[in-house]
Amino acid sequence: MPDTIENLCKTYTNLTDEEIELIKKIEVGLQTMANLADADFFIDCLTTDDATAIVVAEAKPQNVPSSYKKTVVGLLAEPQNEPAVARTFKLGLPTKQMKAVTQEQAHVIQTVEPIWFEGRVIGVLIEEKHADENDEMRDRIRFSNQSYEKIASMLTRLTDESLWLAECIDEALILVDMDGYVSYRNKIAYDLYSRLGYTTDILGRAYRVVALHGSNLEWFDQDANYSGIEVNTSDLTLMVKQIALKNNNVDFAVMIQDITTLREKEKEIILKSVAVKEIHHRVKNSLQMIASLLRLQGRRAKNPGAKKVLEESMSRVLAIASTHELLAKVGVDQVNLREVLENIKDSTLRYFLEPSMDVTVAIKGDGFQVDSEISTSVALVVSELLHNSLQYAFDDGREKGEIIIKIEKRGIYSHISVSDNGKGFDINTIREDSLGLSIVFSIVKDKLKGTIHVRSSDLGTCIAFDFKDKITNTIDNVT
Image 1 (cartoon, helix red, strand yellow):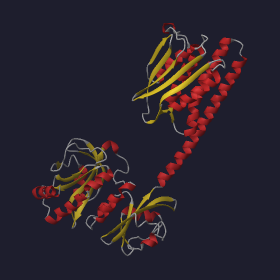
Image 2: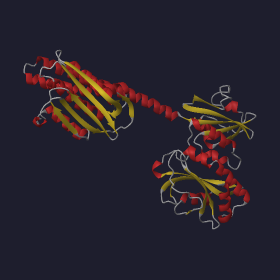
Image 3: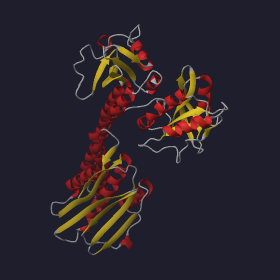
Image 4: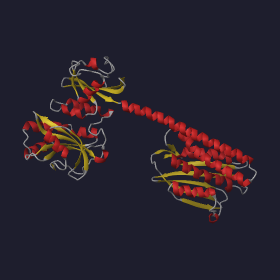
């Protein structure tokens, strides 16, 4: 790439050899910046006509898709397509968050910084991201803890001409020289210390005096070359990180990130989680109370038909309550479907398995996360099918029976079947006015956006249904 830069600059620009060398030095860190920012980076220089710019260097991010399919090095950047580039060349000022059209006719958001040499803008450094990924922090590079070796490498290569690159970092940056004095601080660091009540610039002051974590620097792990500590001061929560450099008379760098908003949001999430748990807990208790009232009413009912209706209603209420019981434990709107069905099985056997019946119920298959709407609908369907099997499949006098509930995750649609080894029935005689089956067919079709299949013979019955997932992350596989 350096040879390409030199050839392009000498062919299409008026840059001097010294200016070209500075462009080549900046290009060395271009790939690191692209990877850290998850963005495309370019260096453009003005052509000899001073109207259009030419791309002399590029770096595509390695962790996310680039906006470009092909290289654009050597292509022109027209002012009408990239107004941010034209503005920065004309005014010598950074341009943040401006829309542009790439050479491949894709829409992007550009942040442009001027490259200065002896009082003249000789080029621009461009950061580009997809237009639909725009956010308020796009104009700054965000770093993870794993990136600090790369940051240290970049910082040790900073020269007086390229110190402006430090202004692209989204954290306060302080460089401390070998004598322990602040030799550089970026604008974010200046603003942060002003917010903390410092009336004079920290530049040139002893770092021990202005260190936010206190004057004792022994916590810094010299062997690890990197250490971090969380500090609370002036109603702010700050993450202070030190990086050993030992280069160019710089002892170490300090990077300070304001994580106050992050910690406040974490507290809000915890409070909301507690509130959600309490809501689901109260709903569960209310539903269980309703089920208890239905059970008491059922015991007093003398009409067999009324008694049956009350028992079925109780079963449906308990099915809904089972989902809220799990939601009350986790505090989020997602539950493990297998756990829901285990609760359904336990409550159904507890209330509806006659003492004279020897029937086992087994659940096989996958456990995965679904939202509360899906889990409630599935719970109602499975509860209805399980109740039907217990009520009708083994009433021919047989001594033992088995019911298997099988869960299968199949990508977009998942599959559940409830099968028994009972007496079976003629599927052509299914009553359309049966409330239970009407509920099953209606929920599968309207709520779960799936299909239902019924198969029965004298060897048993299997009713299976598919349902569309809303959440596809599998938590575990249970066999």
